[in-house]
Image (spheres, each protein chain N blue to C red):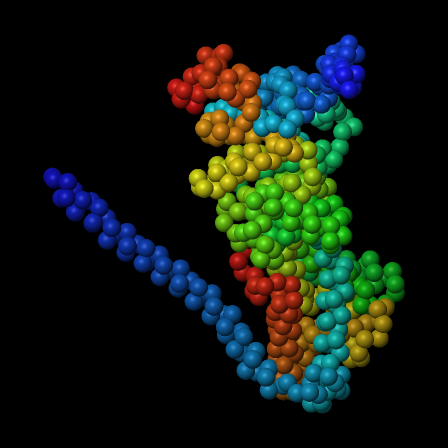
Length: 280
Length: 294
């Protein structure tokens, strides 16, 4: 008995080898996305300047900052939507699970399947039903098994807390539901491709307070299974939903740390000024 | 002046004037609509009035009789026009839609701008020139007037119309829809065919129907390609009849019956295009006349 306990305790303590590999683990396990001197440009003009940060797995990271500071540009770089704009380029490295997604051989299509995106304005596909909107990612990538689709659609709508409201109207057009429901539909659509990271670009800025509260509850639940990055210019929202907060100003990362610390005890004067509403 | 006085003088006085201007403008717009409808309405009335008398079962199904005899009908012409529309659509629409997709989705380079320019030029091209082109390329090569040559000429006329309307209606699809699809990890070709074309369906159909209406009435290129015939379809490498060609021939004959038959054929052509339009819209969409573009 005593022997057994000893063994258990001993196995819980880190060995030398494990301590050495912590650094490695830090990079591969605990941090989902790592930015390394990452910059983004529009026709050669930098919008994001030399950002280095590490985004934790299964946590909510908020990106805040005044309008035009590059929040949206940064989040669009995460799943390579940035490059769709003509003249848009990047430099530096952006690692997902330790692999640079901007490497010359990297395929944006597979990256986008791993990193989902929810946009500022709800944008369900106008010609598709609620069901097809959720199933779109699967169907367009060749999944035809009806039973599998049914199951995924239901699970994703349940995850995005929309199932009870639309379960009898799955064949109605995706545009027929309210704005808040459309946004949750878009979240369900993004979840259906089973991404590992969910990027949200001001997902609640076009919504009323009740819908916003629902989205925020949803984010809180989703972080158990997903790494979430959310852009917001609503600081209360950042404080409410996020575990970590990054403050961006004029394309530069001013401060990044646990949300509590950023809001209660920021180290930079600029952060304090912005958070206390002195500018922005 | 006190505040109410100012209001009285400037705001209220202005308001009356503005309402008057509004009324005049609305009246002028309505007047122009009426002006535009007059020629269209009178053509339709005239064609219906004169053409209706010619319509009979024999007129619709029988081949034309001997010149000068008030017998026979326009059966081969109706059949010919339908074959030509079908064949030209099969050839012209896929090429036009693909061109439109290229111009809209990949068209920010110099090559695309050149293509767009020549496409616009082609839209305005005299159809007789296209007929001569088809004559040289196909008729002279095969050695006979043929259905192929006619359909080829008509598909060239369709192509720029379809390409342009496809491009324009694809451009109306908001960028956010494209990004939504791409963000799901959908390849671009898949996004274009399954999401964009579905979203812009009514615009696409409008373009195709416009092009069909245009070629249904083309006469000049047909003279040089299908020649005309008083027989039903004989084969794709043989001459064929078509309604506009038949109208033209009938109008050249100095008899009363031929004038009547000409009107009748014109009426059938109008009804054919109209019913095709309605049928396609009923089969493909909820909105029958697709006038509201998304």
